[in-house]
Image (tube, rainbow, N blue to C red; front, top):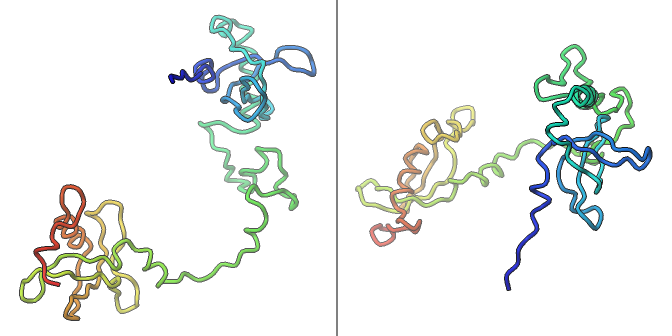
Length: 231
């Protein structure tokens, strides 16, 4: 059974398009900007729109402002007033809302909340305010390390390939991990301690470990060196 989806809600408007909507209070059409379809509202095609006050609402009676009409002097005046009011309320992409002279205003006065009022509601609730901060658990962080407990094919003292196990990060005299993680493998300077089957340990840079891991994988990502190593 073939089914043709209705995509009219995605092609009827463009993001932030100038539109008219029917104001139930004044029984007149008012200017707004289109934000997207409101799937959870109403039985027909409803849209999210934003008003010059910064408030966003849903309406089904929304129509685009014709491009020719937007070019008229009257519409240029109305859209300019709308934009100025909206930017005074929520800011804009070109001018940061951060005020270095009064840093506490950021995120609050732009949305109508008084920064001096201790009764404002946090968007994530108040439970996070009472959370206790614990010290970082280094053993736990090591368990999250992607290389810890990995087995890599490396030559032992006799030059025979064996599976060595990555045990932990190498640490300096101050018990700090040597090297730093970096998204660029070339700049990753971490050093690990590896244990061989005979109990011997050795230090290897992360680049050496990753290169050998890559070499022992086949084209489909499976370990292709299992038959050529001594455990």
